[in-house]
Figure 1 (cartoon, rainbow, N blue to C red):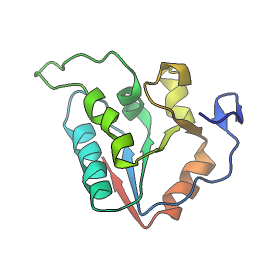
Figure 2: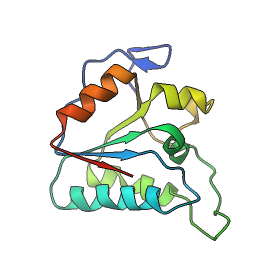
Figure 3: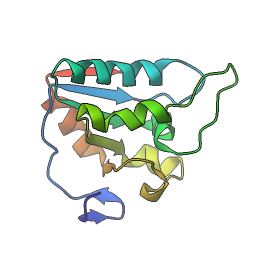
Figure 4: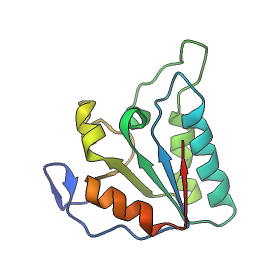
Amino acid sequence: MNSDHINGVSSDPLPPAGDLLVIISHGPHGSSLLREGLDMALVAAAFGRRVSLLFMGQGCWALHPGQGAGALGQKGAHATLAMLEMYDIDQLMVEAAGFEQLGLEVADCQLPISVVDNVTVQAVVTSHQLVMNF
């Protein structure tokens, strides 16, 4: 985690642009979109793409540890999230507004993240060649 956080929001300049930005805005249960987004990120990284992940809204729950199986037997995303580092995916960002709305804190997350404000979110989206939204 960066030491330059002010009120939980990063004051760092725009993170380095990657080839692919995967936006995760769906929670761990209720649909397969979280898993599909993470799978897309891992496959792209396996083929040499520089990948960044941005968690927004309900997607921020993916970073919260202690997820159990979903109502339909869906597995939690922890195992997939743990593989991100092996694929050199280390640019993990969360939208400050969504994060705060859910009552989450940086210390609640299982992985190191950068909390970014809305202006930075827009800059991150425009700085990537490809953006996939899940």
